[in-house]
Amino acid sequence: MSKLRFTITMTLDGYIAGPNQSIENPLGEGGEQMHDWVVKLKFFREMHGDEGGGETGTNDDVLREAFENIGATIMGRNMFGGGPGPWDASWKGWWGDNPPYHTAVFVLTHHAREPLEMQGGTTFFFVTDGIESALRQAKEAAGDKDIMLGGGASVAQQYLAAGLIDEMELHVVPLLLGGGERLLDNLGSDVTLEPVRSVEGPGVTHLKYRVKQSGSGTDGQRAESPAKA
Amino acid sequence: MSKLRFTITMTLDGYIAGPNQSIENPLGEGGEQMHDWVVKLKFFREMHGDEGGGETGTNDDVLREAFENIGATIMGRNMFGGGPGPWDASWKGWWGDNPPYHTAVFVLTHHAREPLEMQGGTTFFFVTDGIESALRQAKEAAGDKDIMLGGGASVAQQYLAAGLIDEMELHVVPLLLGGGERLLDNLGSDVTLEPVRSVEGPGVTHLKYRVKQSGSGTDGQRAESPAKA
Image 1: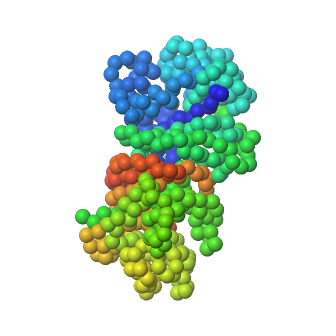
Image 2: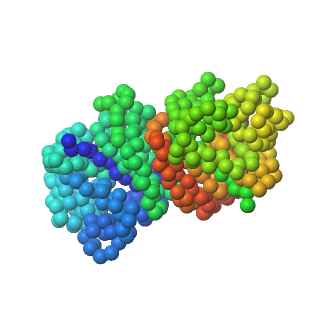
Image 3: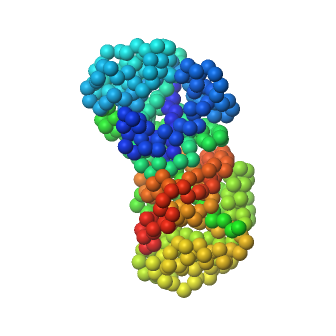
């Protein structure tokens, strides 16, 4: 069975982006340093087409594993960027001509757009009919492989509330941002988490959970609207 | 040098108590289950005067260590209970005649009250002149030993903002409460954390940090007022 796996870096105070996100500062104020642990890793460099060097060890192993057996990706409009509102066709995401996904990527949006084929096996598809449709399409694209949910917070909250995420791995970094986009908000207490493992790496602790749906709100409607911009 | 050590259980969404705290429900709705990991431990039972049985292992070791070498305790009025407002002298805390602290305990409050001597070495002192005074008195009482900060959130925020906490250990449990008292709020991004270690126990991950003060707001005034009730 193909699984939906969500993996993201979160500060100890629960943020996945700082305040005042902008084109110049897509992760918000102070947000960039959340990813200090990841940008120096060997696997991160490989994903971005740089074959030379990079750090190996626990963090590299965890990141490599997070991308293993992934056959499709889902993300929100904010994570793809270029919004909100109707598309400017010149916007092709934050990642240049060869994005690090190397799979079909389904972008949740209110605004239709033709698929966008990039180098290295990444094609962006723009999905306007909701999270379940995006998941269905991603499953078709992924075949036997798993699907990665990239973020951001509101799309993750929609999928969590709908009970559609199978596994969540949070890379918890020892930072306080004090504001911005908080991951585990708007969820009430209906999401049940079962610990899979904790792994300590330099400067980050990796917490992995199986996700279950324990209460009401299983249709995900509560959190449906705000994320698609 | 005597250290101020803060240790507390926190949900993955950052809460140390659920919504609607009351006398009947001091940890708020859903809050009790946060401590499922702790109440069954051998050391917890010993602290509460029950010598028989209890779980040993990683969690028991971590809890035991958290209470090792502690010579005094500080807590907020809410954690002691019986408030807000002037004291009802019949209120002697949540813990019965033999509280689990077995040290001098300094309770931060706006309302003066005579010291309250309990069984087992616990004496509650009521401090009305602020967090620095409480810390000074606790250091005198502790001698060479360390001081434990018990909580709750607003007192912890005051001490964190003032740069007075040396070590913070969060016992992160795989629960979402969706509301209540959030620990790491009102702090901005001025608190710098240096990871000491992560330890995985059954049903809980123990994250320990050294705390440093990196920016402005070192006088702790910003968070001073709301915690003393």
